[in-house]
Image (cartoon, rainbow over all chains, first blue to last red):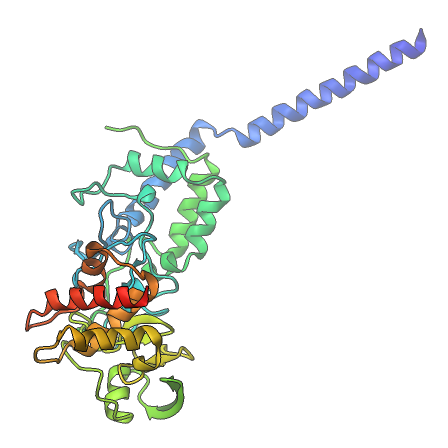
Length: 201
Length: 154
């Protein structure tokens, strides 16, 4: 009888501890309203970078990349190609090398290519998609939260956009509105808040 | 000035040039290989096309400092390659050339196309050759010669 009471007591304690741990863990992982607001604000910062010409020119919905701050269609009849790297005879690597060629004005970074159509941030008329749509696209394609953070931290083409080199006339290409460090910090805040997305207006 | 060792058409070549010098001018001025042509200087026309590690590359915009150890093949060496030889033969048999200035670049692009897509469609040819301009307008004969070469390679 006493042994049964002990077992009951032990089980109750374990259950109570488990419930308490679960409550604490839930408090730690579930975004609070404050962190959600911070996440949404951080997303707007991320969005301001993603839609800068250095980034969005290769996140098109069309069969071609864009160029320049006016986001005009890429010259020289360049096309997307099946893998987003152009076509044989006219690959991205036909001109874009592993680093910026400042003496000839051609930008470059490792594995220059277009983003896949699933990561388009424009419509087929080259109009930039609203913040809510881009947010959903990014969050839906981020299978693990760390993936998008790593992409923004390490991907050579992302890094390139913050050091895009010089144009042929010697002037510097424009850069996104945040520094790379600020961009990564904003991404981290957004990810930590559970990748919240704004609603469509 | 800096010294670079290049692999050009299977041969080792040493050049001492400014690192910002485009590959085109290293080929033409330093190595006296004038088959590769200067057209626009901004990668818009394709006359300067060579193969860099097998990829058709606009040599007018690639500084020598970015070439590295990648092998270079120019129009002078493309005939050593089976596909290159067949394309050159097709160019002659189909009488493609008019003034000829752009044709070394056209051939280099066509070889890159056929190595990747041995039986190209008209759409493949248009997409791949669309960046190689010809002021004489030999496009119809270029397309025909690519088809001829494709059939011979089959």
